[in-house]
Image (cartoon, rainbow, N blue to C red; front, side, top):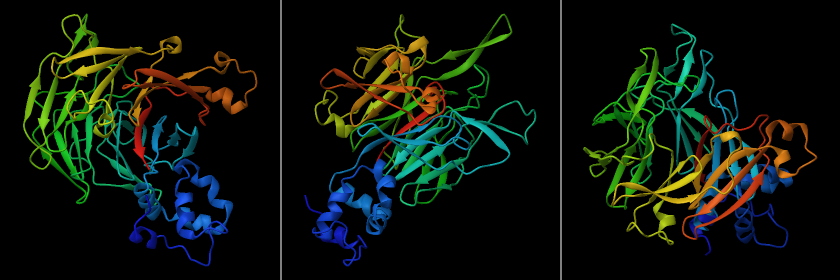
Length: 422
């Protein structure tokens, strides 16, 4: 498929500056656009014409999208993104690329339990829990309402309008067709503490074009630590908020223990991204698990290629320990799908994401476990990342191994991950 004349005319490449000798620039631009985004920073210094072409990011993204050369990439926030660089990971090419740190606030530290969503060439980081040196007592974490956006076109961060209610550990979905983001529930719990923290029930909708937050109908009950996803087809979409915790009790009057929800609440998104909530009953069953595992959703585009058991609805999967479950909406229950072939060492948590319709289960392993004898200092400190990939249609597993650029093993109990297509 050749690009349209309007797309080609936007490339802003001087015809006197040849991209590839002996090939017209129109064809050469298509060849260069096929290079994975994760490798662009490496090949830019090749020559001046390549640097100019690959720096025309907006036009390049349009061309890649038109030619269907976009890559499904993973963004990993290993720790507080204010002090620790987030990284872009390309599983297909086993390439890593650092992103700039988020804008720094000298009064806060220890940001965690934030949520990240992607929309087009933009990555949003919303809320979270942190410590503020201006608050009292200093050792008590508090939620934040801050919102940041990383623009891959300009390759920089920008601060957006904050949420009305500060929150961390909340449900969040993006509505690209409407240019909106919806957040629900949340609280102030920090990863340094296993219990306590506040809970809220408020729900807000963000308008990307207006840079404005609006409060909408709140959750029926306080709910934090919950997960959110979209369901339905293009005409009728629903915002599902599942799991999480609300009230708490104490053991012996001292130790706080969370009361975890086993149900879900659903909002019909018919009226410009907002509607009324309805409750879905117990999803676990009497003998079911006590709390929600990690949730991923195989989107509608991937489902149309063979997962069409839900009549166009995305398929929802949950990772609980080393078992994967598929959610059956008809029976309101989780059905076992598969087991992870290789267990995590020392019962450490897995990372769980979906990329291009496949489920990626990630865990750090020691180099010695993979029969390696020679490793650099950085590799010794960072270890090796094992990615086990499950194809829901074929019901098959495969795996790959990569060396992360971190000086420490990834902790998937606290690391935040988000997929993006560039």
